Image (tube, rainbow, N blue to C red; front, side, top):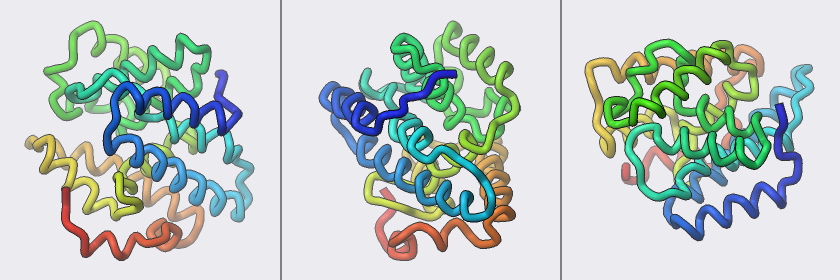
Length: 212
């Protein structure tokens, strides 16, 4: 798979997208990329050999599909996937999808407001997830970091998930979706022998800020 290697080019794509649809998703994307960078750096200290620039760019563009405006559910994942696929970056395109599904191809229909996603988009997303049912460590880290950062900076998984739930609603099955993030978090923490919260500057201050 092809990935964007150049940070300046990735930032240019994000900037162009933000001009089409300004919003808090842009700062969120920047913070997700930074969290990804920090966690990958820590993993490399424990014997991993991870390409930090490659995944920083993938994290920076994980929500690029929001260039189309405000959309329901995981439609932005489909839009981001098709956009980056057309540019020839299949690896970055895949991250646009995987970050929205912490459980991989399990319980796909549990995504918030899945019923609002057009059938042809559902079919494409399901096909992608079935083809990539086992996430590599890169996808796992970005998926987790998507839930560790908002537009203000780094935040706890608990606060981020509650914030999303308040804004978009929950269902009887939301806990199954949330558990996927905790499973990834626990796996990464076994590799680095510490909580990921200890790596992210200012995360404690987020506890005292207003949920929005």
